[in-house]
Length: 352
Image 1: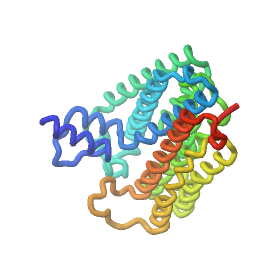
Image 2 (image 1 turned 60 degrees about the vertical axis):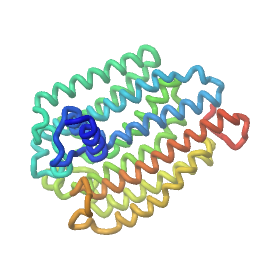
Image 3 (image 1 turned 30 degrees about the vertical axis):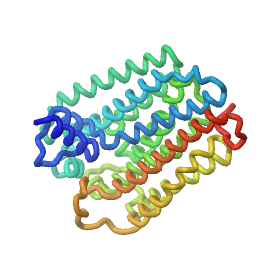
Image 4 (image 1 turned 90 degrees about the vertical axis):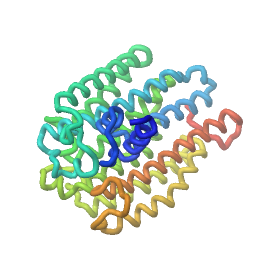
């Protein structure tokens, strides 16, 4: 297989977490399927949001030398490893418990690492352990050189990610998985990135982590709506199973809209600069997704639809990517405005 073919494979797997049957599997494609990078943009956005908020604070308070670019890079890499670890742990423990089978939804839209024979159960377990050790090493390093609070946030994040499906807690099965994702991709990821890059953490950052955290939560709710019947049969009490499909769909619509309410509110309260108002462009996609959520799921997939039988999650993720991307762009605009015209009164960026 030449490099062009391999590169085409990698692009396909990164985009869909799957590889067409006619394509020859290569080593990197196999591991990309195992760690499922098609949703890594959510983690990348969380880390970048935390870093840009720290950069705003540094510029506002004439502390730019305090912004640690090396720490920013390390924490982004660490967060991506954490996401990969969480994905692998989900597949391992769901297969171990008997939840994931060839007939369950998980194996229908992308290859399951164990069930598809990509890796043995013991091999996946070893990979998870190695990944956790790397995460612990990064956490200990930041704990020593930055702040002991890193240890608290880091360990909580690792514990929640593992016990999302691992016994005996199994947060997903108790209707707590959606809230766990909200905490991890919001206050934890954004907060820890801010902390290790600037060396401090303020309550405002926790508040400013909420808009994007909500959009990540909607992705998981959408996925659990798609799996609601299968989860009912398996006794998996996700939030949509508990409150019902229609209520869960309306909840997702409300949460997606609340992203824009929180962004505007944060600007009006002076917690963040006006650049993030560019996020309001995403409202047009919100209305498209809302119309889709108000209609029944189609009986057959549209042409070239890559992740059937998933449906509602795809559109929640579609909204998440635009909302998150625009929010990051807005933070970048704030930083540029502050760097070029720091005395402009209307640039009301985080200050204490």
